[in-house]
Length: 113
Length: 114
Image (cartoon, each protein chain N blue to C red):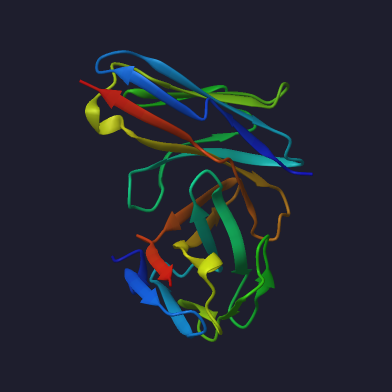
């Protein structure tokens, strides 16, 4: 069964600190993995995408990694800001999935001053 | 470019009432989805469509119906609302470009059934 598991479920950090969110998946055949940020009361917005051949990709203070062998991805946030407080959702697409995207349940990040 | 637009943004229904949620996208995407999001559950797929005139059931389709008469619109209907359908509903459309996939989400509809 195609599944995406995220950890931790929630995380509280102080402003300026770094953090890493984890995503493990059992989706096959794998097409790509995308991290979304969802602010409270809003729809998810894409942060970065990882395809099979990519190991790491940065988008400002966000850096995503992918290990296709172990089927793990991480999202590292550097020098956190209050505006980083949100839920971060890992979404995996399978090849030939008839349009279906497999969602993790998300990690709720709270950045405190 | 509006992207994905959902209407209404908020709604309160009485048990047994019916309503339709409208999702419109202006990106010419083939795939469209309806999800519900409940605390601690993440996004769960209700129904989806892979093109105009097609619909398919997702993970939690019971109590909902959908229609995709026009490519740009995907409607979600509740025939007889139940309190268990209190949730936030998100519509999304999907872009595929080779191995690159991206879902674009609407701003959500917060539905309360009393």
